[in-house]
Length: 127
Image (cartoon, rainbow, N blue to C red):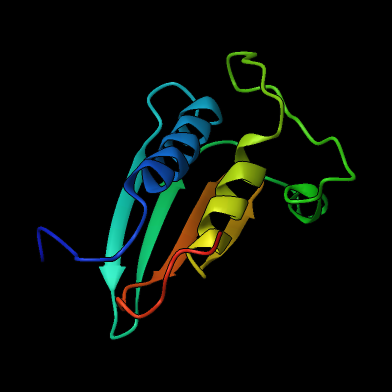
């Protein structure tokens, strides 16, 4: 296992992406649940995933997660409130790095949010 994976990125933006994804994983996990954070690299990109074994997301709700025209918010397992804007912000910041944000989820078994960003220095962060 490699302790550090080099990537050219805007550190504050990456911190916000991770903070939002981890916060959501905590919010939607049951007590004594587990969260796994993993980073992997390939030749061209770095892939970071946040996986929980929480309540999961229905396919219908997954389709609405990243839409501005749909106000999508779900209370957490302890009735935490949210605005639904955190994932939109994550998507925007990932795309500013020429990357992509993906979600895989099954109701009752949890969700995995993964973002991939290029690691080559010749790819600059979009304005």
